[in-house]
Length: 311
Length: 265
Image (cartoon, rainbow over all chains, first blue to last red; front, side, top):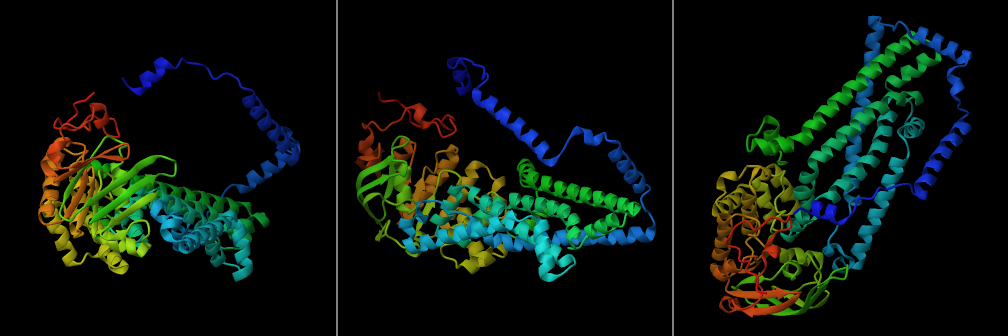
């Protein structure tokens, strides 16, 4: 007899029913929605007013047809390429900054890391460093990319560089925290086994934590790149390079046909990057499962990774 | 080699896992720990390799006062103490070679061990190869550990302990979740180590294995030492377990019939 059956036979089925708490919750949600509508001056009538309709129609007609002049397309693709470059560099820099920070932001568990085993001084220093790093990561993460871009435009001037730095700063905060969580989530018994063989923290990291968390690490990093790609398209609004610079110019100059070309290219680009990232991520996470089924047959990627020591 | 006096361990949640254990284990002994689940076998072993801090009493391992060692001193001690656990012992994403290499980390400098991930020094490969050959896995040197069966993974864990060149080997239920053949391979290796003069302390589910392989048995129950003596005299003792207790963490029945589970009620 399974536990499920036992539970069914011993506990009579009872419907959850209404509880006063649920009613209050529903009321609160409704109230906050109404309050928000009032606060933002939103009303369903806004869609129907003749003024709005005319404006929308004029704008929509203005967008068509998109400017497909080869010379313009070429320059737009140039900006698109710059956007991809910003996202790539920004993500790479975020990894470079976020990874070391994640090491300090990952808690160590087990009694041998206790105050008694480590000595108050080194134990205290470790925790101080932990909270400082977590704090730094929170600040990096808490400021949105666009605000970072504004800050860096002031600091280093207009162009793609502040864009790269903005993405790097925000993503370093996110990746640092994610990596730390992944390292903490590694099975503690694996860590304890390596420590029992005399491994120090760096060795445990290299031989246990990174290899175990690697598929997830890569997956999260790729996902971050996809997000950065989307974010990079609007960094230009504040002068931080990429296709966004053109978007905001064309919008302000009422050159809607150029604008629609830009929007189409952006859409294409983001979709492409999303698909690429998704494809690689699915493969990464599936590889383990598929390899398990295939037994010991190894592909080219496996051999390369094995040569690098990660498999 | 090991000297425990009134050794007591209480976990942070208040569980009293070990109380007043006094025992001396001399070099060259092969000691089997027996007892039902929750008797304190794992706690005792984890105290021996410093994963836990004793709550009260004294514990000396190879002359080192456990619980009072600096992290550096603990790492030095651990080079001489090899640990084999029941499961969760291999890193699935690493090759068998690198898994075995984990046993050498205490001997290698940080820099050398990082380089070894990219290019393992020939003498380390040799050492790993010999250890794997001993447990019958020589051909799997470059296989990913994930692709191995449970029994093979257990033997990798034994090989990892072998390359450490330790004088004290601690094994926590090394044959609890493997087939009979693997169990016998593992125990034979431990016996050979014992015959080479190493000290072996292992916990076992199976009383007949303990009788066949150990020179001395310690019986634990409820955190107390209830038996300490040669294997012969344990027969009449009530530390045999019911079938229910022999089931592992996942509720599976014992893997093979040699498990002794006559209830002595």
